[in-house]
Structure formats: structure tokens, C-alpha cells
Image 1: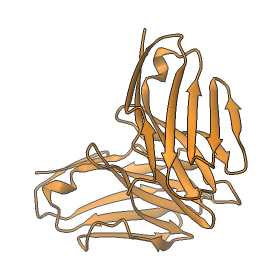
Image 2 (image 1 turned 60 degrees about the vertical axis):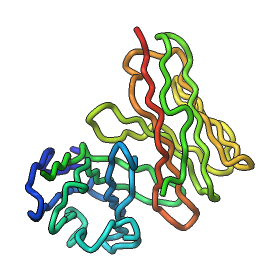
Image 3 (image 1 turned 120 degrees about the horizontal axis):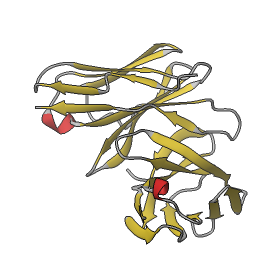
Image 4 (image 1 turned 90 degrees about the horizontal axis):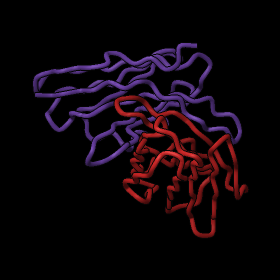
Length: 115
Length: 111
């Protein structure tokens, strides 16, 4: 398996533009997580899905952020409009939650710069 | 908010020495995990310890868990230059798959 695949790896955009980050989880995994990492705030969980259903989006900063998982093999995180403070590395992770096993597999991340 | 707090924030040791990192958390947990992150990369799972376990080994890694103190430690023995990375603990609660990460320890191994 190729692991969790994120695209793009790098994104530079102007303030006010819409940004869409994409994630393909590992086939067969039933949970998907979006995290944001910055020096100041560390790793923050934004939202997670279980069986394609959003379970907890309490970490989504504000209405400018939205996430979807239309099927088991694809998820998007959208920021509209983007702001400079959204600059961060965004990670997608997937997991096969079975009993006590909660190991997460991370993608390589998308480094977002909003200028 | 951060569930776990790693200590120290940064650690530099000579190659061959042992490295110990600590993690404290706030609420009851189901599992505690340790992850490694190399610069510019995603996180990689190292080891998982369940709340009813006290110690676990994997290769050069040794993890302990003290649920009464809400703390865990990660020991890397005979460190190598390739162990240079940031190390994070992560916890999840019973019935809640949400993984919450700590602030991380940046480990530097000096050749």
C-alpha cells in the first residue's frame, strides 16, 4: 500500500483565495483525521471521520474551514477565504479502529503558505 | 487543547547514550502511543501501550505507563544519529477514537 497520500505537498496562495487540500487514506481504514501543525500551537486535531461520517469537528477553527469525505477513499479540507494565519502544515491520517487498536498512519502533509 | 505535555522540550545527547522523554496527560485514557516525526515529514507510529499495561518493549524502545500519575516515558537505548527527530505522545479515550497529541520533544543525537 502506498500509505496515506496528500496533495498538494506545497501550496502558496494569496489571502482571500480558496484552498482545497486532498487526502487519500489507506484502503480499508475506517477513520480519517485532519491535523494542523504550527510552531506556536503544535499538532491540533481539526476534524475526524468514522466510516465517512464526521464525528468531531470541534477543532475546526471557524466557518472558513470545511471538510468532506464523500467516500471511503477521499477527503478534502477546504479553507475559504484563506488568511495568513492559516499558514501551517496540514496532515491527514487514517486508522483502522478495531477494538483497542488506534494506531494512526500519517501522510507527508501539505505545507500551506498564505501571503 | 493539548492533552499531553512532553518533557523536556529539547534534548541533545551523544550517540550511544540513552535518551528518556516523558509525557504527562490530563484525562483518563484508553491507549497511549508514541510517534516520531523527522523534519519535514509526517508522523510515524512507534509503539502503543494500553491503559492496563505498565511497560512495553520494541527493539531499542522501552515505554512505561503510570496511570496513577497520568504519565508515560519513552526510553531509546544506544541512540543513533538516525534517531534525531521530534517525539510525540498521543492519547485516546475509551469509546473515543480521537487521538490527541502532546507538544513533542526534539531529540538531537550528536555523532
